Length: 261
Ligand SMILES: N[C@@H](CCC(=O)N[C@@H](CS)C(=O)NCC(=O)O)C(=O)O
Image (tube, rainbow, N blue to C red; front, side, top):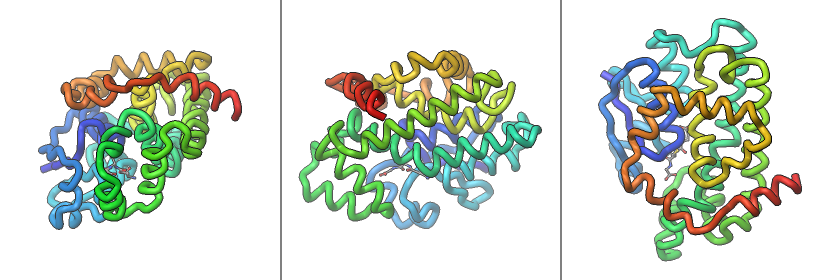
């Protein structure tokens, strides 16, 4: 039996839900957040205190990109890795870019905008207690800085830089194929789409105004049943709330940052 520990708005959990949906697999779901990530039971499954965690036949698999490769190897139909070797390398490159940079910088731009009030509304002592518990000191430092400085944090500039790089890679891929690593949906598209949806939800879709390939790919991905089922159909009023409550337009500043890169 498959079990998935996740949360609706977690970008890395979205990847896993999309892959499960693309393969027609069902998992027993546990929607967890906050202190639930730090219970001894959950830490035994995922010592990093983050989602997602997939449990298959009682064995936990952690790290969203590793989970994607695991699912594709264990449940090979339909294949989500291309057969051609260069395309397979391209899938791994996208996943590497995300694991090494884009994921943390997605946290930066999200906490500088839509999720900032979640932390800003806490007292400083509560915030510091939360940061102290988090196993990744680097992620805590990013969050601390953006909660204090918002869009003026130096990490926002780095975040835009790496999102620009991701969008350039998408544009480059779509100049060659209909999807990011070939003519069929692959683990590259599945790993990347949550981050582009996130940019859209925080009002930054103008980042691909001059990238027609990204715009066309994004439309194509929106129409994928697995994306709709695993992302949009899951979002209830509470999940939409942070995006709908965003009370400023981040685009003017982001556009200036892009101009200065
Ligand atoms: N490298 C990990 C990152 C996991 C991660 O950062 N998960 C976020 C949600 S997308 C999380 O659980 N955050 C909870 C927190 O930071 O308190 C993966 O790809 O699975």
